Amino acid sequence: MSGRPTFLTDLRLEQVEQLLQTLGEPGWRAKPLLAWAYQKKADSFECMTDLPKASREKLPENLTFSSVKELELLVSHDGTRKALLELWDGCTIETVLVPAGRGQFSVCVSSQVGCAVGCPFCASGRTGFERNLGVAEICDQVLYFAKQLCQGETIGNIVFMGMGEPLTNYLDVIQAAGHLNAPWGFGLGARNITISTAGYIPGIEKLGREKLQLGLAVSLHAADNALRNRLVPLNRKYPLDKLIAATDAYVRASGRRVTFEYALFAGVNDSPEQARQLALLLRGLNCHVNLIGANFTGEDSWQASSPDVAAAFEAELKRLRITVTLRKSLGRDIKAACGQLKSSHQQRGIDALTGVS
Image (cartoon, helix red, strand yellow):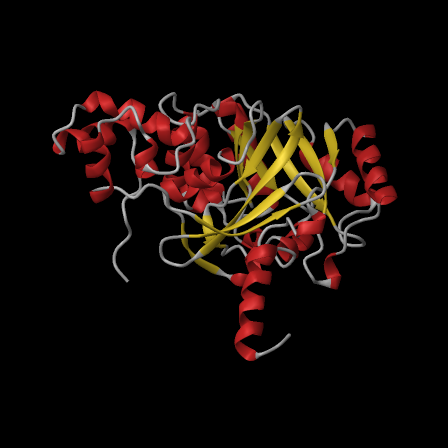
């Protein structure tokens, strides 16, 4: 297989200026070129009608327009959309568009092909890690959905909560977030971009030193090390005491409140006592807890907590003065949890090859 192409959205503004100049074009054309890609929802260089025809013909010889191709798109009754996208080398990733009300949407992007963390309740973890995504492969997930929106609809938030551990692909993730934030790029405020982590402390520390205005979310799921070792294997290397200390340092350095994601699994981590342990762990930390109804991924061990149990867990946290929101789980009918669509697509391919119907 030939080497990776250079995609338009891989490049920063100054890099596009330099490329244009090497092609004998004025550098000032970089801004309108990028505006077509990020803001005007172009799907090819030919669409860029305010660029000279000669320029439009030169660009495909040096750049590839988009890094993703739709393989499958599922639409939920609640408006959630989940896409399986193919990359230049045949690898596949998932990305999700989530309605947030009043014409606003959030895009959940992947940062890696597969995931090395190996959380047992996550379909991505069961497929294993293949490779990191490049800058364009991240940005183009957002642009893929931006092109589907109707007039008056906008993407108001981007969350790095799809396949992969974003902070182990730090440079590409931060550069992609920069493109999505930049005025010459997608132009979304940094405070509307959130990076999620399973608890990779070196990345949290590095992000805190940069003092960016990006949000940070930590997938916690348990308040004691024994259980978290089981749910989030990365905890064996970065246990809770060190994780909470690193998160507190991040809050102090950035001035931003951190979010803790806590997926509720029936009979595993949803008791009132576990709510009290969580409140004790987070006491004094500037944080918000998102309680999430777990999506079923085919393993009986990871059933979602009942609505009554989830509500009781939320009430106990509130009683103990922890800021908390019980999130409604969206996209259940289209298997919107991380890695489910890719896994089902691969299984259908295996079934087709083996003659299973």
